[in-house]
Every structure is written in C-alpha cells, then in structure tokens.
Image 1: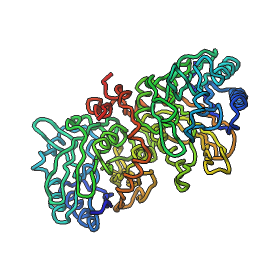
Image 2 (image 1 turned 180 degrees about the horizontal axis):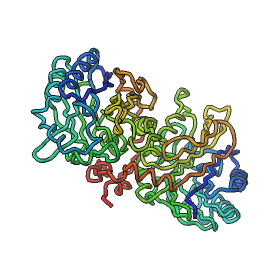
Image 3 (image 1 turned 60 degrees about the horizontal axis):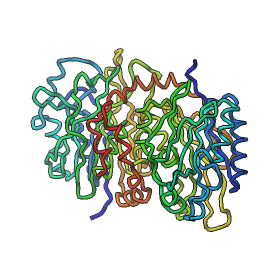
Amino acid sequence: MTRTLTVAGLQLAFSGNRDADIAMTAAAARAAAEGADVVLPPELFEGHYFCRHEDEGLFANALPLDKHPAVAAMREVALETRTYIPCSFFEKDGHHHYNSLAMIDDGGNVMGVYRKSHIPDGPGYEEKFYFRPGNTGFKVWPTPKGVIGVGICWDQWYPETARAMMLMGADVLLYPTAIGTEPHDPDLDTRRLWRRAMVGHAVSNVVPVLACNRIGTEEAGTRHAQTFYGTSFACDQRGDIVHDLDDHTLGVVRASFDLGLAARHRAAFGFFRDRRPDLYGRLAQDI
Amino acid sequence: MTRTLTVAGLQLAFSGNRDADIAMTAAAARAAAEGADVVLPPELFEGHYFCRHEDEGLFANALPLDKHPAVAAMREVALETRTYIPCSFFEKDGHHHYNSLAMIDDGGNVMGVYRKSHIPDGPGYEEKFYFRPGNTGFKVWPTPKGVIGVGICWDQWYPETARAMMLMGADVLLYPTAIGTEPHDPDLDTRRLWRRAMVGHAVSNVVPVLACNRIGTEEAGTRHAQTFYGTSFACDQRGDIVHDLDDHTLGVVRASFDLGLAARHRAAFGFFRDRRPDLYGRLAQDI
C-alpha cells in the first residue's frame, strides 16, 4: 500500500443548464479519473453560481441527498472509475438549506455529508440568503491511501478549518471553490489573496493542499456579470506550487502527493508537538 | 490622530559580546527611530543565538525584567526617541527561565511582559532546554495609533497566535525572530516557508505584518556554524510585500501601515463576522 495520493481537480465553466452542467462535469470527472485516487469537481457544479442574486425561486433547486442529480451522477462516476469524489451540492433537509458536500467512496457509496461551516455574504456572493451555516462540524474521510479533509470555498480562508481537519488526522486538504470578480469593486482582485491563505495553511500544517475553481463569465453583458478566475492549484506541504492552471482554460489540476514524506516533515517541524491549547480558549469562545 | 502607524524593524548581526551587542542594537534603534512609532529589534539581540547548544552555563545570562541590560537600554532609547519598543530578552523569574518580551512605551515605561508561548526544539534550535513555555497567554498593546500584537519567533508559525491577538483587537502583528540554516540538513531552506506562513496570517486576518530577523554566520568555521537568513519583511493586509531586505545586509525594514484602511478591508471581507467558534472547540482541547 503506497502512501502516494493522486488528486485530480476539475476547472470547469458552466452553462447554467443544470442537467447539461452535471452531465458535463460527470464526463470531465470520468476523463480525469485515469490514474487518480480522488476527483474533485468545483463547488456547486450544478450550474451558474446562483448566489449572486437573492431570488426565492432558486430554493426549489435544493434537493435532499438521496434525490440530488449531482450526487447521483458522481456516485456513478465514482463506482465506474473506482475513485473518491467529494461532491458539492445544494442540499435541502426539511426546511433547511445547506451548501453541502457528499463524500462518495470508490464504490459509489456516500460516506457522509459535510455542510459548509462558514457562509460568506457580500455583493455578488449572497450566500447567507440561501444557506444555513453548516451544523455537521468539520469532517475528514478515511481512504486506503490517507485521510482526506475537505472544506468548501469560504471555509478555505479560515485557519481554523484547516487546523481542525488536521487535528482530526487529515493528510491532505481539498477545497472546491467558486470565486471570481467582485461586481461592486472592479479594482479588487482577490486571486493572489485566495492562494496565499491556502498556501499559509499548507505551511502552518505541513500538509499538501489542492483547490479547484470555476472559470468563465456568467451573466455576461449585464451589470451582474461575474468572471470566475480559475487559477486552480496544488501545493505541497511546504507551500511550493506543484501544478496550477490559468484563469481562462478548462483543465485538470493534478498532483501526486507523497503523504508519507509530508507526515515525516510534519513531525520534524514540531508544530503540532508545540501547540498550546491551554492558551487557545479565546478562539473557541463566542465573545 | 492619524491611523497611520510606522514600524521600523532592525535586521542586525551580532558579535557574541553581550554588552557590545546591546549597545549596537540601541544605536541602531536610535537611528531607525526617526519618523517611526514603533522600533522592533530582532529576537534575543543580547548576543549570539545561544540555543544551538545545550549549555547549563548559559542560564546565568537570564535576568529578571528589572535587572536585564537589554531592557534597560531599550527603555532609554524609547524615552529618548518617543517610540514604542517590543524588547526581546532572556528572562529569569525565580527558578523559571523564559524567552520573553518587555513592551516598552514611548515614555520608557514597561507596559508588561509577554512570554513566548510556543517553544521549538530541534537540531540548532534547542529552545526547550532553556525556556519554559510562556505562562502569560497572548498579549496586545494599546498605543495612540493602534493596538500592537507581538509574537516571538516560533509563535509566528501558528495561526492560533495571530488569531488570538486579532481577537484581542490587534491592528498590526509584529514578530521578532532568529531563524536561519538547519545544521543537520543543509538542503532545508525554510525562508520561503517562513514568509508564507506570516503572509497567510496577514490575508486570513486582513492585517499588516512585519517580521525582522538577524543575519550573519555564528560559530563560523565550526560544525555548529549557523547562518541567519534575514529577509525581514513587511506586508500589508492583503499580504502584498511593501518592504523587504535581503539575506546578508544590515538594515531597517520600514513600513507605514494605514490601519484605518486595514480595518475597513477587514470588516468588508467578513472573516470575523463569519467565524464559527461553536465548531472550534477541538482547537482548544488537549486531545
């Protein structure tokens, strides 16, 4: 049993037609699966990034885990290709709506659901209108080659997300994403910040990180136009970029992480040895 | 009252003679103080970085706050130049020894002491032999222009340190440092990791950061030779480097941070708004 884990992250553009977008993502996942242990689609690949508007009609697109076509499609792909697929989807659970992720194993089974813990809100990213903050807590997922930690988009900015998953034993951190321009501020380009935050998690936790993001301009030609910047990347446990994509090309960000070497480096650095949980109480208090 | 805070960080090399090194640092601090609100000397500027050896004779160099010549010298400089000086020193308190920092205000008064919370240990950095892990908890320091958070060296790798100081109201994070080569592993150059971790804190907390480090080779020509890599830097609240130094030149890393703009960006990003302390309990538990 090797400790090399290969992850293929999909950088895709979406049409806005749900069935077509799910089918396209499934096809891309199948194509990317060759040689991969994990295939990671971007966040909410069931269509356009709908959160730029607050539209009550869109809640109808949320569906329970066992009825969601995105999850069903990825279960088929996972079984066919014998890969693990963290599958983002818009979840309905009773009267609650979540930005969720079904972790699908290499037999096509749902291992469990993680619900996005940190929900953004601002011009172009009105997620607090749609999503209840997740109530599952952070989760990690055992696989034969290592433990996978997955956060969803906004979670990726939080050192707490990364650290919590590491304390649960994660060997690698993955982040499906939907991020791009800020419609209210054409001068604000967050792409370098986006990468720096996650590279920081890689270094501070001595862990490989992979994030994949969508591309393309949605609602082009309107004042709501939003262009997603891709720049999907993988970095190793020292924060060195091992593969990345540009801001406008469909593709796969692919990396084979040596999890054994990462664990060796992590132990030698001693960051976990020297933590002071007795001094971190403030971080976990609502004050 | 402006919200622009100017910090001058000293990048120095040390002779190993305590009195001479303290006097040299005081002279450098005086020279750097013009136009600065805060002058930051590097960690343990009272001589060579002694922690590369475990030598019981060196405990004799630790002194109480009110008897330590490094603190006395910096109190004089602070009063003369009307600057705040976070002053690193090897502290003795009864039978305890700490890697400490006296915060000195612009009247030359000691506002309080912070004791390094995270203590490293490894070849070339045998700090656990010398220093009891700090028992003060993290601290921040009010000044007329903003609240200053200061961590000491190894603290700088911890997202928890940065976040805790931010939750206490810090407007800027400063890190006096002593870091360089790894005597056991000539191929391990941590300088890019060092910077990435702190740039990550800047982005994740939307806060300016400044770190200063020593330069020079100590114990040159022996098998214990250790070369400190300087590369002191300042970055703004988006992680953009605004000033940095190279790995071999004496100098001052100087930055004027717009704390009002940083606060505006911090509020707009919403990272603090969207935190989930209810999900962070694991971070503060010793399990």
